[in-house]
Amino acid sequence: MSVKLLEHLRDELLACGAAQNTPEFCRAWLGRSEGYIRTLRNHGTGPSVETLAICSHKLGHYADRLRSSGDREHGRLAEQFDRLKLLCDQAIAEHAEAVWRAPERMSA
Image (tube, rainbow, N blue to C red; front, side):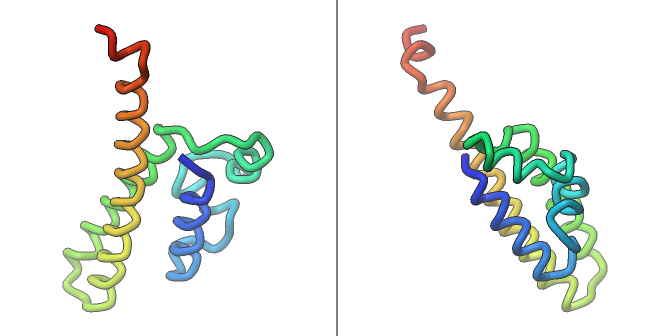
């Protein structure tokens, strides 16, 4: 998993007005400190599965709420949130598969 995924999510949410800046995105959408992305970049690591799960769940929650409003613009935003949620879910699944496919786990 790469910090690029978080940057993509951030950019999409900034563009649609769901976040105002990177610190807010990190706090409100990832449940992390405002410097989370910067810290990941400095350490050359990716986001935790927990962080992706938090973001995925929140995206799904708000997609459902927006969809239920019946407003056409809200419906488009819900579709965008659904796409972003799918990206988070795919990254979680890739990480999970990498863990269970690790050679030391495959011998069981």
